[in-house]
Image (cartoon, rainbow, N blue to C red; front, side, top):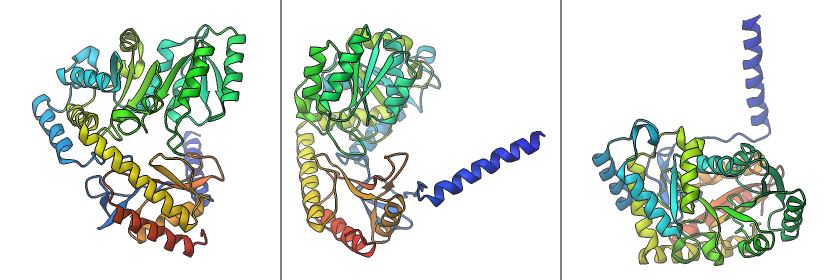
Length: 400
């Protein structure tokens, strides 16, 4: 009986995988045999990389690499446990202070991953008497974090301030003690930048707090690259972010907030209490990335990044492709059909361009796309080469 039951389970797993494959929804893993950068080695040859979150081009930067090596040489591989048991290294406190100072907050708490930061922020701070009003396009980690919390849940359509106000009114009418508006600062699948000025105005009207996930904004949006809230010139209450994108490209997440909020999270946030501390190598690399991003060199990198995005958008639009509008260096090429997105990504790889097709459940059904992303490390010549490859693949597959 047990063997038959187990066999049925594994047959069901195989059937589900076959169904995913038949729908063109399989997400292949491609092996990279080089450092992250504008050119990477895949399948034994060099290809142009246009789908990384390496916005400032620091993931393969030698200074960032060597800073990580020096930190590991000094502090070892890690603490071998969580911070409240085996202790906190000095470099963890240094990174918390540097992050808070760079982004303009009182304090910071570190997590092993940005997913954990969003998974850990809501449950310790909000209870059944409270309300969370969440953007419909929020990242999966925000959605999962909200699910772990007992607060009442409300959802508003992306960029729809009338809907947001309606949900805030409803939350107040339902007697919420505290209300927090939760949103991505920049939406990872679309490149939309949240309307934080309007959100700030509504938060003030309805006495609500604001939480922003700035993983796709920290380091390159706004003055000094401090993120979407700085881009809009507003204040927020809670900021979650990552060292795994513009700020070094390794891993690790953080929450910035007032000092007393961070103190409470260090006592109650489960992903912090029950996960190992960030490795010294990640801390060292992230500290160096923050140093670069915060200074004059960071300004030059941000200027190049936005110039690259503008050049690519203009050329792809002229070629006849449908792009999501905006100015963010996330630039999705809309294709609609999941299999078409996979086929086009495969053909582009043959033409020397590394990109990935995105389809359900990462994006809604019928909205499959190739999400291209610019880096400050790309040259105009590389951008022109990629547009040429897109045109060739698009014509072959009937996209344009």
